[in-house]
Length: 96
Length: 96
Image (tube, rainbow over all chains, first blue to last red; front, side):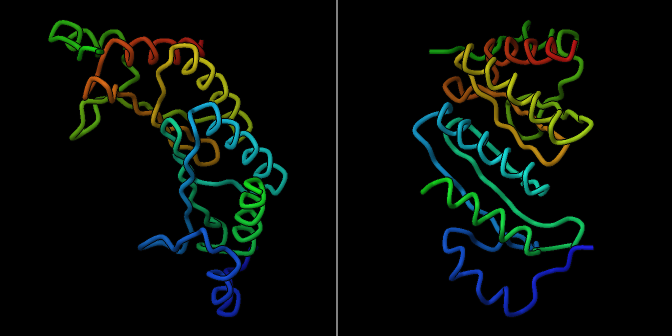
């Protein structure tokens, strides 16, 4: 069983993941990414897909052309867990 | 300039693309696909990405785990065009 983030971990989110925002009405975080074109967006998605498989934790995501919107939450926990923080940090590292 | 589908082409949609449904409030069609797991869903998405680049026409799509929701419309035409029909047919062919 995966545990939801405690108050201390939640308080640290804004500092640790400044690019990510809380999702209204859900215990989730989201970030929108823009690229030069579909090829670059897809390349980014392919790297995120590998991270997701490696971490055995998968995003909810939407793509249209050069835009990729990623939402992270942990269905098994019913909300945000350390898995989301780990995946968000790994995604951020892809962008250098 | 890409032209929107005429009445005849629209009337043929239900017959030609039975798996696709009109999107409420938009001139678009959508289809939801389910797979065994994320790896299979991703493999499908990779094939759709190649089709999209080849046809220079890209989907709006959403994925979570084994589910892929694809919406097709032609932004340049302000609605459905022959490009959407061609991409939808090619996507359907991927599934055999």
